[in-house]
Image 1 (cartoon, one colour):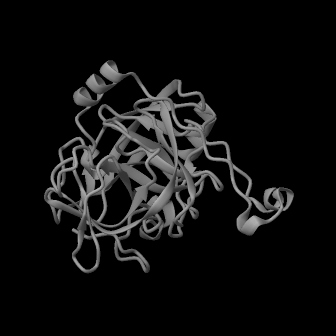
Image 2: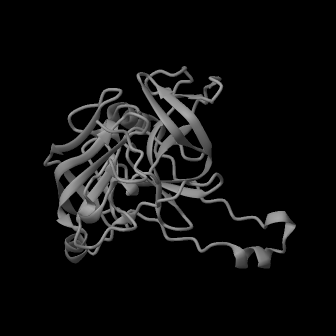
Image 3: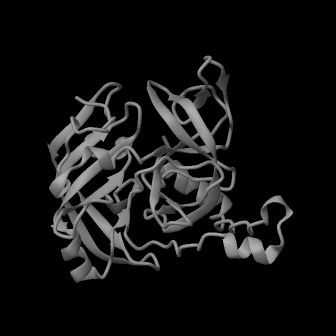
Length: 288
C-alpha cells in the first residue's frame, strides 16, 4: 500500500512536487517510414481528471462497465485498503456493507464540481486483488445531468505489456504518465498477496494518496487497472515494500517501482442494474 498521507505530504514539502513526465513519442515499428507508422498508430484519447474523485485518504473514479446503462446506480472504484472501516483481513471479502461515504467529483481540469455519496460498499477485498467498489445514491444519468461528467468505462479484457497509460489521482490532482512494464505472478506485501499485478515503468512514481487512482489506457480511454502500491525502501515483502514472486517461488525486489491491480475481471461480476453477482459465469473475484 502507499505510504501514509502525512508522510507523503512531508515528502512533497521537502522535495517539491514532481511534474508528470511527458509521454514518449511513438516510434515506427520495424524501421517503417514515419508517415506509415503515424497512420497506423491508434488515436490517443484525452485523459484528464473528469470522472475521478477524491476520498478522505485516497483517490478513485466513477466507473461503469461495458453493459451498464445510464439508469443504473453509479459506482466508484478505489482500493480495498481505502475502505473506511479499515483494511480487510487476508481472506476477507466485504459485500453489501452500509456506507454513506462522500466523494469529491472532479471535472476535466481537476476542480471539484460536486459531492457524491455512497449508499453501500458493493464489494471490497485485499485478497488476490485490492479493490473497493461503492454503489452511489445517483445514477449515471443524474450525474451527467447535474455535473456534465461521464463515468470512466472499465475495460473487460486483460491489459497488454507496453501499453501507454496514465495514473490519474483525484486526491492530489496529479496525472502520471508511463507504460505497462509487465505483469507479476504474485505480488506480496505484508500479510497480503495479489495475483497477476501490473508493474509500471519507472516514470509512474506514485505516492501516498494516489491509492485507488484509475489506470487509464491512453489509446482507448478505458480503465485497465487500479493503482495500489510500490516498493519504497527496498525491503523484501513488508508493508509498503511489496516483492514480486514468480511461479517458481523466486523473489525479486524492485525499489522505487510501483504497481496496480487489474480490473478486467470485475465487469463479469456485475449484472443488470449494476448488481453484484459473484456466482455469475466468468466472475473470478474472491467470494466471502
